[in-house]
Length: 283
Image 1 (cartoon, rainbow, N blue to C red):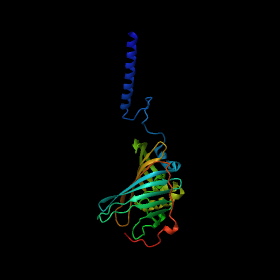
Image 2 (image 1 turned 30 degrees about the horizontal axis):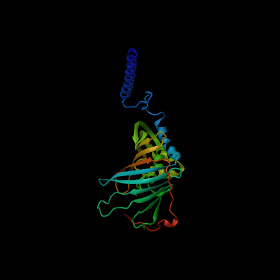
Image 3 (image 1 turned 180 degrees about the horizontal axis):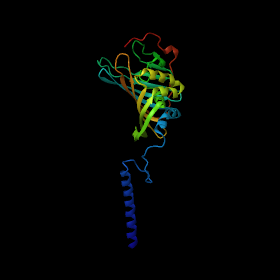
Image 4 (image 1 turned 90 degrees about the vertical axis):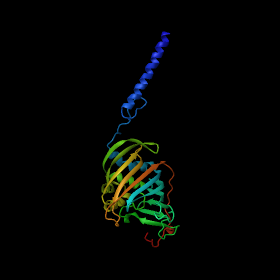
């Protein structure tokens, strides 16, 4: 009987120890405890600026992913959103996205999705409209765009979005959270497009230099969410540009989600004969 009482007291002490451990986790503001009781929710090691600057390299190492994009802008008192979805090959710096435009305000007809191919120095669009045959592609030299194609195509090239972070001036660690079920670290800061242009991979320098000159300000606020491999799972930029028709700068929020890293991303550019060479009507 005495032995049974000693065993019962031992079990009660063990249960009490577990309860104290759980309460201890709650007392550290939800930062989380490892199975051994060590707190794991503090800020990660490393300077936030340096961590964020390396995000583009982590994507190239990942080679490819699926992508989902949205671009929100306010114009004429109306907020519109352009959405895209597809795949991106970070090794080849090429992507294919299906872009859905906002509904026609007049409700006259549904707009067909535009297929966009993203490549170094070029943007290809199919189902562009404006008098272009449905089976033809339109090619745009991104060096001729005042925003470096960070905004014009309705999609911010995912790798160029990461290259913007090479110009990070300030960054702070906000906290740990989840994006689409993946554990991530949230950073917030500002990047300078002119600095990013000097530090970016050669294929992105021209576009970023153009954007630094064409935007209302070269400073770009951002929020970025990195996984444990340093890969971008979500990034949101806030651009400000003047479109020539309005005196005030237009604010644009561009968001990119990346997931399913390593998926096949076979992106092929159109043949020369499939590219439209005629006049594009003004819309």
